[in-house]
Length: 254
Length: 304
Image (cartoon, rainbow over all chains, first blue to last red; front, side):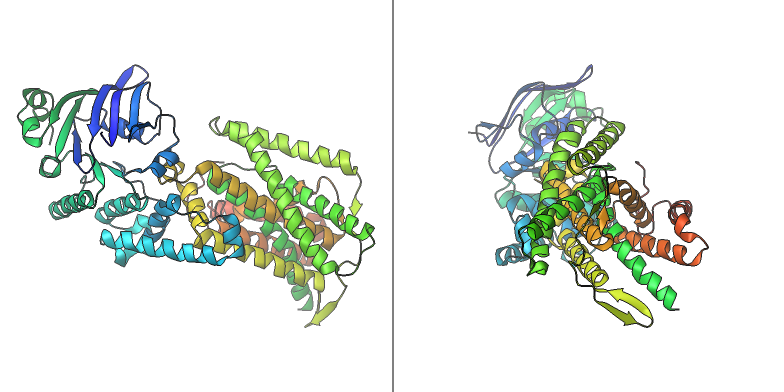
């Protein structure tokens, strides 16, 4: 059984059909690349899966259980985390606090505990801090824990977004153009990081425009055009698919 | 010199009241970008609930251990007003979350009118007196200025509550979630933060602090009435803007400064007592011209 199963997914905004009858499956432990020209509906798929808005039609199942209608924080709790195409960190929180926010749903210390400073609460706060440092270290950000997110260089902000997403302990990590704006060296580091994340047991759904990245690390790729899936397969199959070349690679502006 | 010191001490006390109330305005604004105009009335509600409980305690013929009784009363009233705050948000604001900016403001004014009139019907329109002599009338002479026990207690309690709030918001898991939610609701949700629960939490903390302020105002001045929330609410709102709305330390600093400024003006300007409100709002206008984001605010206040 697929870890995530998307069936007949459809969403339109006004007259524009952003996603049209999309079917795909995400298997445990793979990196699935999702490519397509700008406006193909990729980010909309992410928004539908993470519950930002409901689909018009169709089904999204995590482990065989429908997640349609759940609120975004419930979907995160069920193990789907994401990053954003345009970085959306909490700019006025430190790097450490950003990651701590991601740990929120995995911890439970409540108001009374916090007000009364119970022992359990203090221990949990300590645990959260240590755990947050662990994720910062994982993304090689440990030296920047006290820096406000908005003051970090762009490349580090991208890494911090991934650290924050990982802190929610996801089973599925959705990355929305993680290589956008990165230089060559940062991009190859990122590819290594994504592979490591996959090897640690987290399934990755990746939107990326950088062909070197997608082709280099994806196990499988699906191609979207105008909200419709036009191809699916291994990187080689997709690269040689005439429909893809016609619809996408031929028109790519890069 | 001793007048200056005396007025500064009085101003600090009044400033502590403003600061406690201002925190409620600023936290709600920070998270919802809403000015909760009914917040001052929750403060007033706290003053009345405190009066009722104190009267019940004294009515039962108990006078010993009044300090402990007051402590319990403080906690009970803070909890009760926090519950009122949560209900208010559920009934009057949450249904309007996506209705634009004006509708919740109108709703807030409605809640304000409701609370004032409800209290007026229950307690009557006249001033109500807090029992005298609950706090022993001890006073000290410091460099020619009189400091009463009540003032010391007010400052100690206020600073304790403000310190606790600051700690909670900056150093705990829920506090981090509040700050994250204030910055970006959508992303906070995607981090697994239940934004509705965080909003409820803010409507617990702010009203609880306001309620503590209400009882202290009752004890300090000895009399309260049902429109108490308007005057204090407006001043506290001013203090919140002065410090930078949405900014928690800003509300504390803004409240203290406003209190001190107001009493100094009353003490040094001829007939300053009569002009003190005008002077406070003049200060507000001045600050807004020079620093539109308030003293400690960094973001431009784009929504009001």
